[in-house]
Image (cartoon, rainbow, N blue to C red; front, top):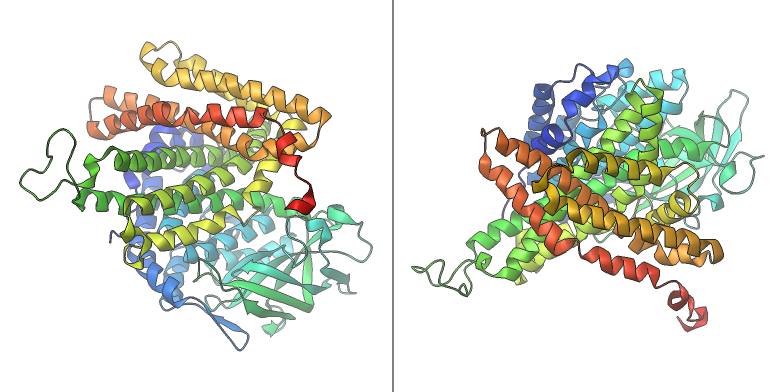
Length: 594
């Protein structure tokens, strides 16, 4: 069984040679001192943590799982020690506000760290990633008093954080939630209600857990416009560490991520503190959600990387059959399964989508960084438009394609992929949830096709088109680039055509948006992956032109790019045809016949 190894060379390539992170950091005062050497040091330290501390307890954590005893949740053996090492290393506050003890690192660096954590041990990674998200919401929206009290302890890992949205009757439609918040004379609120599916809602890793809870004030408007956000600690730090009215009612018994505690959390008159303005809770929470959805998409990338490493190592060693031309291993009883074209197809497909996904993750993260840190308001606004458009695409594409990559890697191993010994059956189970939580991928697709496209009032698509066109104009004079640019140009033209069709069709039949949404998101992700491969080709050709370093690395990048363009981009034509097929066949069968 191959252990997880952080793909540092590929990460350096995407961060430095494709995204040119150091130059971008230099353009933003808050990150101007972040050098290439410092970023590499962070990545190398994260890789050591992932491979030496987290990966060794991944399988045992899955087998033992979390235990619920007497209202307490106990994490598997080794998790407390691993969390202490993680917190002591300052990793929780990697992107935190330096004014409160955070390190102020950009998201484009953090996404690579998060990918490593997810690939090494997804269940463990979810605890600190939720803390980082909760910290972000507090840093952007909480009062100075709350920030001063809570952020340093969250960044240090002494306390951990959650977000409490879902109720038994209110999942996607948060406007239905019933949790109540009653104001009291001292300016705090008493929170009463029950939340389900709360990641890290109770555990033994930290001394306190800080819940960010969506609830309704007594006079709140109905629906989503009447939701406020509250900070509700498990223990009240200003009252001699008194236990608040917060308890865990149960933990879920799940298909995967078994070492991550997924809890029912009950609030019984728990004291809470308003974050942001009354009835503006969803806006505050979505500050966090853009970052969290990208992080959850990285779960798919990390697990696909781990699965690819396992499948590639297996394929090199597994002897079965002979090559069709001549034996590749004439002195042995059989050739490795890498002589078989279909095995190569599966491995190349996983790699092509994984590497494009990683490049897109860094690209989207760079837009998040510019939207927050850049000193030019026009740059911030433009980046914010791209973030709004691309966040649902990234979350859904990474988790969908990552899960598919895990399944394909499992297929390479045949029967060995189905048994526990090689670890791929766990990766498949752990990857599956990323398509469901943080907003199902169907909801991400509906958000894209509906709010972001058919009702686009902010010019989101126009900003993306401009980005693509500037790139194509910049490299279009290079004749050698045409084999890569041609699929990008062709598919951009087709995507524009499909978008125009959808906007027109949805104007007369609103069901067209929902019927088209999932293939439409897939089509856009295909275009974006093509864009990322073109950017990587430019960087790889630059690397070859320097005539230094690892030529084979850059030549491999060109080979994978060609595979993607020839073997994978044609899928866009089928997606286009599916969308233009319309909603009639989708809506024809009466509901009582399902």
